[in-house]
Length: 318
Length: 254
Image (tube, rainbow over the protein chains, first blue to last red):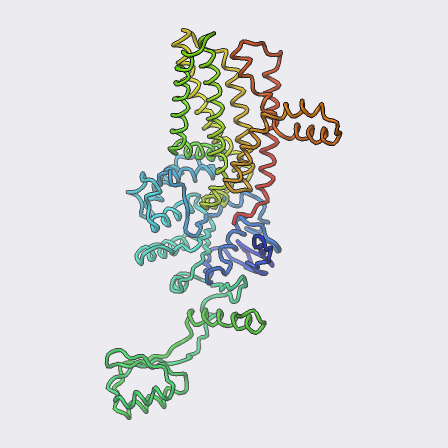
């Protein structure tokens, strides 16, 4: 199968200043990204997402392992002509205006045609900054910087987009706009790899997800394969229960949330029938009853917990 | 083209910075003040103005080279603006050359502005344009280019404060090496002589490029002096830039 990105045993070790202690930022990453897919990189802060991106772009040198882009080893600088990159919390030159910055980026790609000049205005329109093109970047808000960052990542009409936390710093409307933009780019056949820790972003736009924790790729695949399709638990909402019944439920160790006169209860699979009969018998009135499958959040939390337990067992914990 | 874009951007950063204007303002002011000093001295009336003017061009040029130069690479790394450059099809050597040329362009503007101010004052006194000063100004510019290369070299691996100190040391030592060599010739220790000679060749010989005295006092220069001095300067710059590129090539952009 054709790959746009392929890595083998990609590892990066940093040395702490003064103590020279080894810090494993990334360990033996094997990643394959196919053309046209949207890949979501999920992981807590410090998991190695940004390190991976910097290695893919040649900003960092691998300590071990190999990287291929479009089947070529990452040595040819020309490969970067086909990549657009948005760094995390993008920084720009404060002394430039938005338009000047995009022209500067255009020149870095040696794009001098009339079309590329027009593209600067078109991109400012696309990311919603047309009225701010002649404003100094130092007056921009965080959301505006993020938008400008996206515009510069698209200046060369790239085949591959690497976006580091593209939704951070944006309000809900801005997030939706970026999400729509990613889907639009995907429809145009672009390959997109982006990192985030906002789970809903991944669920709505990604074809495949990789969960990176402490430099290790824990799980990787289409979301529906990663998540357990079986029903794990039920969530029911009931009202009209007496105080004694509620006490009784609490004593049984059930997980209750009270909101007004309604009570939400989460119960494991197989126990739901007995509980439901019991509650109806006690005069409860059923408001809702819903099965619950494993969510990305469950998977993510479990992965983080399991790696923490593993480290504790090995004696790394406190 | 890509290098030029980087150079113009660096130049733009410098000229949009108020520090540069204040430095040039003070420099022109000092050249103006030399007029007052000139009235207090006897002898050829414009000598003090020429001496003062040329020294100001050099000193303020060095200040700009150090102030701007030490931040050239460091600031890009610190402010993370470098991610958006090196993630594009730019070789690291192109980045170094672009940054260097940008600052050299800034210095050119500084030297030209101050030279014009000096020429105007001298024209007022002598009624003619002081073309004789041009070789000295040219050599000052070559020396400034060397200092800039050093500032860039240190900036590619060190913090601004350290880079500033290192660069300033190289500027001072660069003016003292010929004297050291003369002094050490009288020393008994063979080792000391070798060490001093090695230092003499490692550090830039900025005195070789200093012809201010000869020009102001109308002393003749050897034939081909300007050519060889310029060649020496340019070769020195080339070596320092190559060194910067080698250091920067293997650096992780964290």
